Picture 1: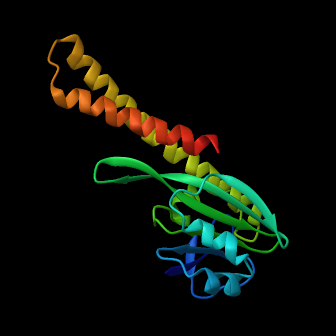
Picture 2: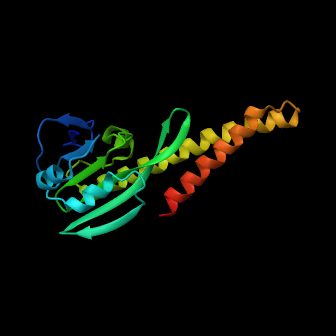
Length: 183
């Protein structure tokens, strides 16, 4: 389990790493989770944190103990296959924590969408969701390119068995995206 702390004190600054957790810092956890440690360290609901480790966890929102928990799924490309993996954002009035066991998200990826400092947890959630949407847009753009190339080969009667396999893989990816976005 890796815990990183990110901070932006001024809008003109870059999102940078800091060494300790305090108010106004974005905490990000990746890798194998230890739910009881995280619950204690950040005041989170241990059962909800445990749900983040479930690779099949569906998108949802839950409220417990003054903290809003938002589960989303983020595209994950491994071994030329596109899947999705859970990302949990825990938001309260004073803190923002993201938990990503699959390690396919970094707060720095959300920086282009961050319009304020890290002491505004609601803005951090908006930046995180915008980053997730952008990741889906990029994957769909890439799939569209694959479809166009295969369509071109089909029109020239240069079809190979690999083209049919690619169409099945594209369909699998789109189905995965659909179920992950449907929630």
